[in-house]
Amino acid sequence: MMRLENIRNTFKSVHRKIKVFFSRFQWRETLIFLFFLLLSFAFWVLQSMQGEYEIQLEIPVTYKDIPQDMAFVRTPPSVITARIRDKGSVLLNYTLGQKKASIALHMQDTSAPDTLLLSMKDIEGIIMKQLIPSTNLISFDPQQIEIPYSRLKKKKVPVRFDGLIHTDPGFLLSGEIRITPSVTEVFAADVVLDALTSVQTVYTEIKGNKTLTRKLKLRKTEGANFDPGEVSVTIPIEEYTEKTLEIPVVCRGVPQGYTIRMFPSVVKLTCNVPLSLFKDLSEEDFSVEVLLDNPEQNVSGMMPIRLAKKPDWVDRAALSQDSIEFILELNR
Image (tube, rainbow, N blue to C red):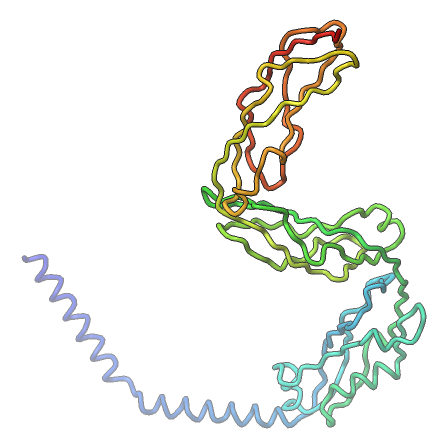
């Protein structure tokens, strides 16, 4: 208790000292002094803004409407640096962004067959349109834009989906992934076109339990332009169920004049099938085969079997066994 009382007394003592200090301080005179100081500063700023100054202005240059079959031989300039002169109040419009200058060059207006050319007079005229009438343009760099370009060749290539599809338990891909359009036109040099057989979408991971459609961009290829550069990808996802079928075994390689007997001649196949296609799936959609090697030496024994055919939308098809017994008989 004594310790708590000492803390309270110390706090009250400090509080009284602070109160006495600020009561002695001449706040009124201080505030008046600060007011006139700020007022003087404001007048000084206004006076300064009436004088003329020079500043350096960086004007961004953009290139629009570039045809797909056009490629610049070297990187075009992205900035024109201009030196301008005007009153300080006007220059604030440029530095604070209220009058932001920019230059847009439309490539569809290019008349030269292999060179983009802007003379000093052309650039000066474009810059002057961006400036306030009272602003003087002193200099700018570069004073001329001359950029050679070439025309690219083209060919059509198929588009492939690149990514992973994650489905909820009990749901699977129920068909082929549909891409619209399925081909894109590629504009590039001969060496690039010769090596390009297909174009992939950007890598995408998709999750869901129902059919969905996504807009995906095509993966960039150095030195190539695509038209279109974006495709619509439809992922068919559906609930699955299990179905069991009995598939006859077909033997390949039986020599003429012989008959083969297989035990069993029919095997069971279990697979996952979309609910909407459950009734449509039949034995004819599958093929189970064995291959008879060296029939002269192997007239009986065991042969491995394999699933030779199944629909693409059927998942996890499994045979009830991986081999069968056979006997090869000579016809009489």
